[in-house]
Image 1 (cartoon, rainbow, N blue to C red):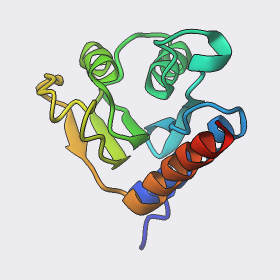
Image 2 (cartoon, rainbow, N blue to C red):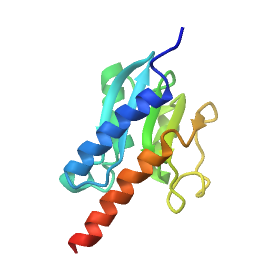
Image 3 (cartoon, rainbow, N blue to C red):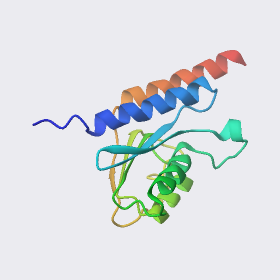
Length: 149
């Protein structure tokens, strides 16, 4: 039997969050946190709205998931995020002990991989899920930003 709740399914939910960010004139990054095939947290960038450089989608999702679970550790959870986490978000993921990170588009300049940010030793990573779709919404956002200025 095919499991309809796979990485593509959950990345599409993260892309829905990215679209919400786009619609709010935020950098369109979205995230969901999943446990036992259930979304326990949804979030998107809110750095402009909250005037807070730490209000990245992942940080918002970690807080919501910890709230939902009533504890700070996310060992049994998977983070789906449309853009490779930055150093700050990867560092926070270390402290949550998240079980797995699945991301869409790579972030060559500020992503945790090129910056050699240490994740929790038990955290698994998978990149490139719906990479084209995740890259496209970011490209479209920045093209529109440039055309408005």
